Length: 113
Length: 115
Image (cartoon, rainbow over all chains, first blue to last red):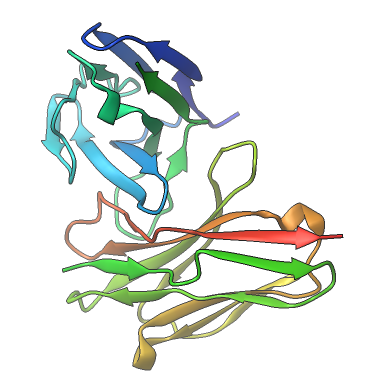
């Protein structure tokens, strides 16, 4: 089954404690992205990757890091989480080309206290 | 600049009513792509439809229909004979011709369908 898998689904952590949210896709897609969803703001792109070792900032990259060492994996790293990073996070993958839809993971609800 | 506006924050209807969710977009791209996604209470994002800017044909899929009008920069979504299972947050999104790695999402419309 074609899917994007995020882990964990839920996470409560404390300010400053480094964490990683993993994302893996089995569709051999080149493009992968991370979004955060906040009430009233929709989804905003954090980082994206167009292929292995190619990553770039989205609209809200501050406080986040990513890496793309393998095509299937695109982890999101919060080196020093803060309460304003409490949000619902989605990983997405997409085939190349603009006329394609994105496939989203199930979401990770992160709470930073 | 790319932007998607969903002015309706929340809509409540009674089952079997028809409901239209509005989506207005801004883009300078000549070619662009519009999408609708559904987010049910379980939280995942479910793809509903994709529309190219050069294809203004309306589309119907069962109880769902989409009205794309370039003249008004709108891509509205109508649910006919709504059902409780349609209760969800619906997002409209835009992808441009050049920076197509990115979706620009509207803020979403929460639809409540009451029995």
